[in-house]
Amino acid sequence: MMTLELDDETAGVLAELAEQQHLSPAQLVKAALLDYLEDSQDAKRAEAAYQRYLDSGKISHSLDDVVKAFGLDS
Image 1: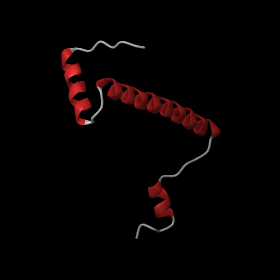
Image 2 (image 1 turned 180 degrees about the vertical axis):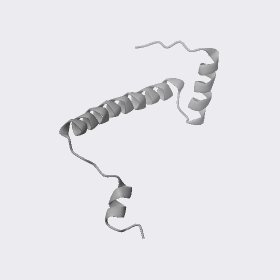
Image 3 (image 1 turned 90 degrees about the vertical axis):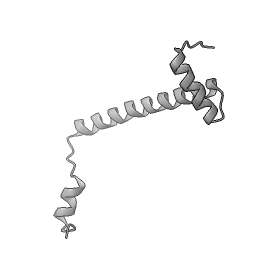
Image 4 (image 1 turned 120 degrees about the horizontal axis):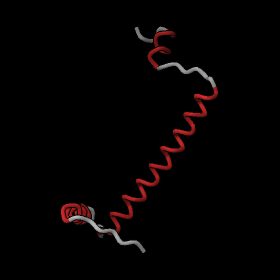
């Protein structure tokens, strides 16, 4: 179990949002924290994948360049 101390303003916003979403404040915090942690993991994986791409030396082309190269811009 974990305890979280919030200032009055943050606690009020949390209570309001929890009521709007028909959740308890604890449920809302847990869901928000889980979303944040998942997003953080995804960002780290994306950064690692992008670094592997950069390290591979492959060349990429923008969509605009491809459209122009194949004459699809007219």
